[in-house]
Image: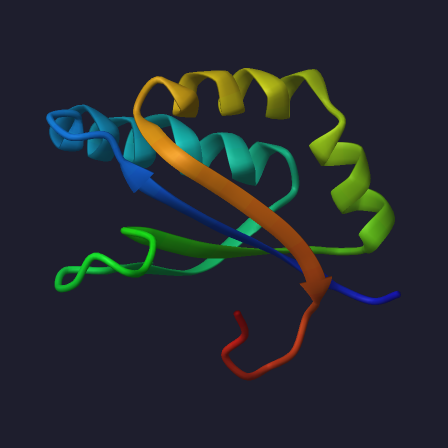
Length: 102
């Protein structure tokens, strides 16, 4: 399989918005990049309660590489830190297409 996308979604815990955005910029994205993921797009829901507050997609070279990242200690550490700031974190790996995907 060629490139794949890691599609992620989550909601920021109430009262943790400032701390979350600081973490996102200074740690989350740089750590994903160190793992070989290229954050491609991110969406912030500003109106409505029926969608995740944040959705992001990151591209990685192959399904095997994605599996390796998702099993790594670095991913678990990042997930643990994220867990302190968000809820409803979910992800899936899908074949990368050039158009928007969910």
